[in-house]
Length: 132
Image (cartoon, rainbow, N blue to C red; front, side):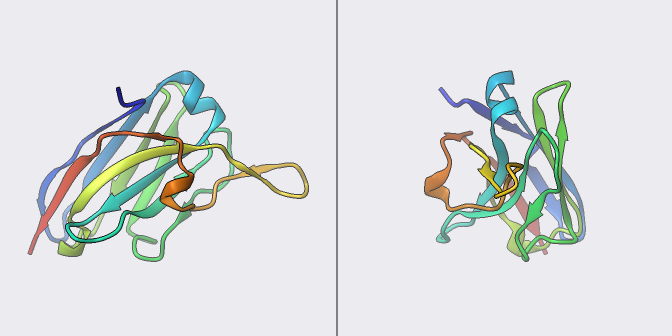
């Protein structure tokens, strides 16, 4: 049973927008970084956005910076991915994942984009298709 559940995928024309949602348990939400990955057909899974529910700035892959926004919803143990100015190359299965945060020398936690193998919890994914 998946410990994260994604919603909101669909089909849209280039230039359009979609908003993905990822819901999880309060325990996973409170203790972990939450991230979005995507995997296009024939491509490796890539991390595109990450956020720490307890605070701090999100991080983004260059491929989505300025077009996608990850946000948190502490009341509902959820994170969202607002995707604007979509392109056909954004077509992929989008996954939500969780991993323990890293610690800075100062002791504060942060959530960089990490390799797929580092993430402990995964959703089953939601398909996004962008047509030209």
